[in-house]
Length: 148
Figure 1: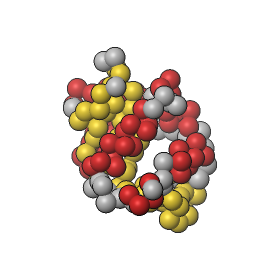
Figure 2: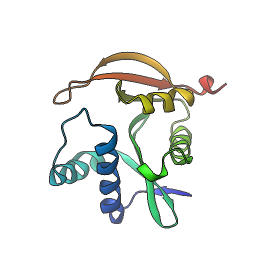
Figure 3: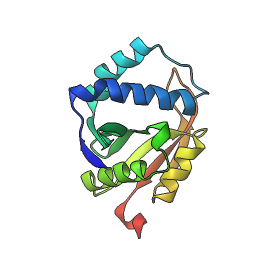
Protein backbone atom coordinates (compact mmCIF):
# COMPACT_ATOMS: atom_id res chain seq x y z
CA UNK A 1 0.00 0.00 0.00
CA UNK A 2 1.18 3.49 -0.85
CA UNK A 3 -0.13 6.64 0.82
CA UNK A 4 0.38 9.67 -1.36
CA UNK A 5 -1.03 13.16 -1.90
CA UNK A 6 -4.27 13.37 -3.85
CA UNK A 7 -4.05 14.73 -7.40
CA UNK A 8 -6.80 16.00 -9.70
CA UNK A 9 -6.40 12.79 -11.71
CA UNK A 10 -7.73 10.89 -8.64
CA UNK A 11 -11.05 12.75 -8.62
CA UNK A 12 -13.13 10.16 -10.50
CA UNK A 13 -11.90 7.22 -8.41
CA UNK A 14 -12.19 9.07 -5.10
CA UNK A 15 -15.70 10.38 -5.72
CA UNK A 16 -16.83 6.94 -6.91
CA UNK A 17 -15.37 5.36 -3.75
CA UNK A 18 -16.93 8.03 -1.52
CA UNK A 19 -20.39 7.57 -3.06
CA UNK A 20 -20.19 3.77 -2.79
CA UNK A 21 -19.27 3.92 0.90
CA UNK A 22 -21.97 6.51 1.59
CA UNK A 23 -24.59 4.29 -0.06
CA UNK A 24 -23.74 1.42 2.30
CA UNK A 25 -22.90 3.31 5.50
CA UNK A 26 -25.18 6.33 5.55
CA UNK A 27 -28.54 4.78 4.77
CA UNK A 28 -30.07 7.12 7.37
CA UNK A 29 -29.09 10.26 5.42
CA UNK A 30 -30.74 11.67 2.34
CA UNK A 31 -28.74 10.70 -0.74
CA UNK A 32 -27.54 13.33 -3.19
CA UNK A 33 -27.27 13.05 -6.93
CA UNK A 34 -23.93 12.17 -8.45
CA UNK A 35 -23.70 15.67 -9.92
CA UNK A 36 -24.34 17.23 -6.49
CA UNK A 37 -21.68 15.03 -4.88
CA UNK A 38 -19.12 15.80 -7.59
CA UNK A 39 -19.74 19.52 -7.26
CA UNK A 40 -19.51 19.36 -3.46
CA UNK A 41 -16.32 17.34 -3.64
CA UNK A 42 -14.62 19.92 -5.87
CA UNK A 43 -16.09 23.03 -4.23
CA UNK A 44 -15.70 22.01 -0.58
CA UNK A 45 -13.69 18.87 0.09
CA UNK A 46 -10.81 19.54 -2.32
CA UNK A 47 -10.87 23.30 -1.80
CA UNK A 48 -10.82 23.21 2.01
CA UNK A 49 -8.69 20.17 2.83
CA UNK A 50 -5.34 18.52 2.34
CA UNK A 51 -6.18 15.19 0.71
CA UNK A 52 -4.28 11.91 0.78
CA UNK A 53 -5.08 8.61 -0.91
CA UNK A 54 -4.16 5.03 -0.13
CA UNK A 55 -3.37 3.10 -3.27
CA UNK A 56 -3.10 -0.67 -3.62
CA UNK A 57 -2.10 -2.26 -6.91
CA UNK A 58 -2.69 1.03 -8.73
CA UNK A 59 -6.23 1.47 -7.37
CA UNK A 60 -7.51 3.95 -4.79
CA UNK A 61 -8.41 2.00 -1.64
CA UNK A 62 -9.26 4.96 0.59
CA UNK A 63 -8.88 8.67 1.13
CA UNK A 64 -8.25 11.09 3.95
CA UNK A 65 -9.12 14.80 4.12
CA UNK A 66 -7.48 17.01 6.75
CA UNK A 67 -7.87 20.65 7.78
CA UNK A 68 -4.95 21.12 10.15
CA UNK A 69 -5.85 19.03 13.21
CA UNK A 70 -9.39 18.36 11.99
CA UNK A 71 -9.94 15.01 10.29
CA UNK A 72 -12.74 15.98 7.92
CA UNK A 73 -13.08 12.69 6.02
CA UNK A 74 -11.78 9.15 6.12
CA UNK A 75 -13.38 6.77 3.64
CA UNK A 76 -12.23 3.26 2.77
CA UNK A 77 -13.50 1.30 -0.23
CA UNK A 78 -16.09 -1.22 0.93
CA UNK A 79 -14.05 -4.15 -0.42
CA UNK A 80 -10.91 -2.89 1.39
CA UNK A 81 -12.42 -2.33 4.83
CA UNK A 82 -10.90 -4.29 7.72
CA UNK A 83 -7.65 -4.78 5.80
CA UNK A 84 -5.54 -2.07 7.47
CA UNK A 85 -6.20 0.73 4.98
CA UNK A 86 -8.11 2.87 7.47
CA UNK A 87 -5.49 2.30 10.16
CA UNK A 88 -2.72 3.26 7.74
CA UNK A 89 -4.46 6.47 6.66
CA UNK A 90 -5.29 7.33 10.26
CA UNK A 91 -1.67 6.71 11.23
CA UNK A 92 -0.64 9.07 8.45
CA UNK A 93 -3.03 11.71 9.79
CA UNK A 94 -1.50 11.30 13.26
CA UNK A 95 1.97 11.86 11.77
CA UNK A 96 0.75 15.01 10.00
CA UNK A 97 -0.86 16.32 13.20
CA UNK A 98 1.30 14.92 16.02
CA UNK A 99 -0.18 17.23 18.66
CA UNK A 100 -3.62 15.69 18.22
CA UNK A 101 -6.64 15.24 15.99
CA UNK A 102 -10.34 15.87 16.27
CA UNK A 103 -13.26 14.65 14.16
CA UNK A 104 -17.00 14.20 14.01
CA UNK A 105 -18.96 11.14 12.98
CA UNK A 106 -22.61 10.19 13.27
CA UNK A 107 -23.65 8.22 16.33
CA UNK A 108 -25.47 5.78 14.03
CA UNK A 109 -22.17 5.04 12.28
CA UNK A 110 -21.27 2.51 14.96
CA UNK A 111 -18.53 0.93 12.85
CA UNK A 112 -16.69 4.25 12.65
CA UNK A 113 -17.20 4.86 16.36
CA UNK A 114 -15.65 1.46 17.20
CA UNK A 115 -12.81 2.08 14.71
CA UNK A 116 -11.82 5.44 16.21
CA UNK A 117 -12.19 4.33 19.83
CA UNK A 118 -9.99 1.26 19.17
CA UNK A 119 -7.29 3.63 17.85
CA UNK A 120 -7.09 5.92 20.85
CA UNK A 121 -9.81 8.48 20.12
CA UNK A 122 -11.96 9.56 23.04
CA UNK A 123 -15.47 11.00 23.02
CA UNK A 124 -15.27 14.74 23.57
CA UNK A 125 -18.97 15.51 23.28
CA UNK A 126 -22.24 14.42 21.73
CA UNK A 127 -24.32 16.75 19.60
CA UNK A 128 -26.33 17.09 16.41
CA UNK A 129 -24.86 17.65 12.97
CA UNK A 130 -25.84 20.87 11.21
CA UNK A 131 -28.70 20.94 8.67
CA UNK A 132 -29.58 19.47 6.34
CA UNK A 133 -28.44 16.27 8.12
CA UNK A 134 -29.50 17.22 11.66
CA UNK A 135 -28.48 13.78 12.93
CA UNK A 136 -26.99 12.88 16.32
CA UNK A 137 -23.21 13.03 16.06
CA UNK A 138 -20.18 12.56 18.26
CA UNK A 139 -16.98 14.59 18.42
CA UNK A 140 -13.81 12.59 19.03
CA UNK A 141 -10.35 13.80 20.05
CA UNK A 142 -7.01 12.04 19.96
CA UNK A 143 -3.89 13.16 21.79
CA UNK A 144 -0.54 11.36 21.59
CA UNK A 145 -0.70 10.51 25.31
CA UNK A 146 -3.90 8.54 24.60
CA UNK A 147 -1.81 6.04 22.57
CA UNK A 148 0.02 5.10 25.67
